[in-house]
Image (cartoon, rainbow, N blue to C red; front, side, top):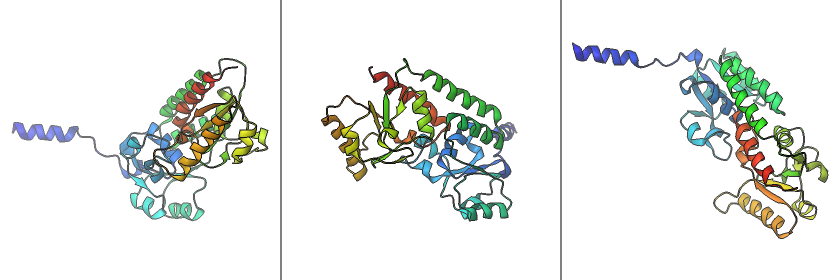
Length: 276
C-alpha cells in the first residue's frame, strides 16, 4: 500500500505537458532566439532548422538542438497542431494562407532596423505568447548592454563591417548600423558610395582604409569563404595602414533580441582598442 501511494504521489508530481493550444512553432531564426527567452521549452513545439546550424543560428546551437526543428513547410507546421505560429513577414503567402485555412493563429514579424524597433517587436512577441513581463526583462537586459557600450570619448572612428567572406558590406538603415553608432563608430560604407548594404571591392578598402574593419573570424577548414576572409585580413595587414581589424562573430550580424547583448559587448570591446 505504501509503495502504491508513493508511486501515485510521484506520478502526480510530474507536470502535465501543456495543451496543444498553448504550444508555439517559430519558423524564423531571429524569432527563435527571442522565443526561447520568453517561454519554457515545453511550450515550444518547434523552432526553425536554421537555429540548428552554427552558420545561421543566432543562439547557442547546443540550446537550439534540444528543441525540435522544422523546415517551415506548411505540412510540417500544421502536423504539429500549434496554438500559435511565429512567422517572418517574408513567409510565402501560400504558406500563410494554408495556416489560416486550417484555423492556426499566426503572428508575422518583419525585420527591425533599429534598437527601438526591436524593443517594440519584443513587446509584440511577448504579448502574443502571453509573457509580457519576460519581454520587459529581456528589453531591460538589452538596454543595459547598450548603456554599458557607450563610447569612452566623443571620437567616432570610421568602421566598415564586412558580411561573411563575400565583398558585401553593411550599409545604413540596418540594426547593426544602429548598434555601430551607439558603440561610438561612424559607418564608413557611405565613404565608398555604398549607402545600403552592397558590394565593395577589397581594392577600394585597401587603397583608402577606414579606421576599423569588422570581419568574421576565419572558420576552421579551408572552404572558399574562409579563404576570402583570410585574404582580406592579410591584404589589410600588408598595407601597413593604421587600421584596427576587429573580429565580429557572424552570428551577431543578422538578428536582434538577445543577440543585441553580445553584439554590443563585442563592439564596445573593439571600440576600446581604437586609440585616437
